[in-house]
Image (cartoon, rainbow, N blue to C red):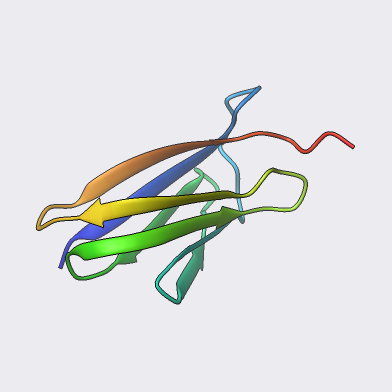
Length: 80
């Protein structure tokens, strides 16, 4: 099965973000200190959700084929 590799960085300072929640189809993991999260799913269409306190959440639809995919994500800080 293909692996989805999500690389999460702060949009402003370009720093990797640790502990960001990444979920696909009920499977959830968190980014490591390098801002990387990995999930394995069968090919298909999925909703990818990325959440972290102090940052705007991101939801996107992704199509997973037979090969691994890498998804770069740049989170923006929430301005209160």
